[in-house]
Picture 1 (cartoon, rainbow, N blue to C red):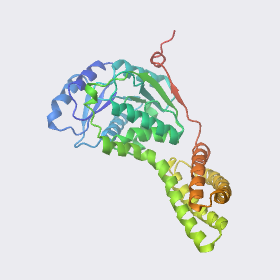
Picture 2: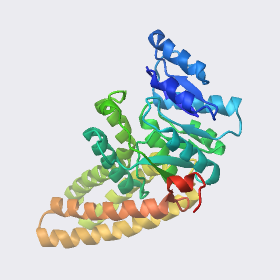
Picture 3: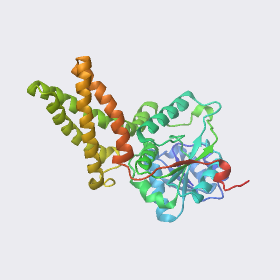
Picture 4: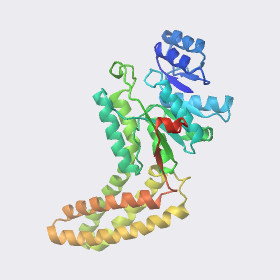
Length: 350
């Protein structure tokens, strides 16, 4: 069990005490001397505690814990839980049991958000879930859950995913979706204590970090669109030839879009070889170029406005192009998300 903790209260030691069947590692994320008693109580309850010299963020604390477990307890699976008492022991046990039985890259304890739930938490998870599905094609019920299980074989991979704060856990999901790694889900209770007042989540700063990786998907296409539109306008003015201008502009913007998508959006240069991605992208670009020219001519004839025609054509091609890139050009293999009941996760039959 891995529990990252920043400025915890008495609930940390209580949780450790209830997890006495497991080896528990607590990472003190630079909480400071004022919280030494809380971590000493966790030690007395049976946890091993490692302390970071200063607050580095939840992602950094998790990675420090993964590295420690990998070095000290090789071959051990890991279940991560929050320190504020909002994960029930029976739910933690269900996730741990599922990790042992599953071949998935990660097991998520997913909340159903029934009963009294703070508005910002309900809205935040709903928005992130919808955006995540849109940009990855992978349905995840609870993208912000802190209760997650990982088999031992995933520890090196977990250490390579960037992110030091709250955005790290979303980056793990994004990377898993890009690499088509299977994800299991186990339903858990939705528990918010005192309106979630114990959370250290900063709505503006941490939301920007969380949504940043998601916006990268759309940002790449917007950048290519801006370059394409600027080149088209300039070349049409210079040459007076719409078709040749559209072809030249699209060649430049497509090259830019391919480089950004391959290197930053769909999994990194080392993961999508040129020999696979480049021919597929070239075929897509050729089809997109043909469609772009045809749409521009048709829409320009119908509307008499090059600007309106360009915007309409790009919206249509953006939706089609993104779906094709995700599903074909940069795809590595079939991804799957499984949802199991708590009884199934614990291996109970009948």
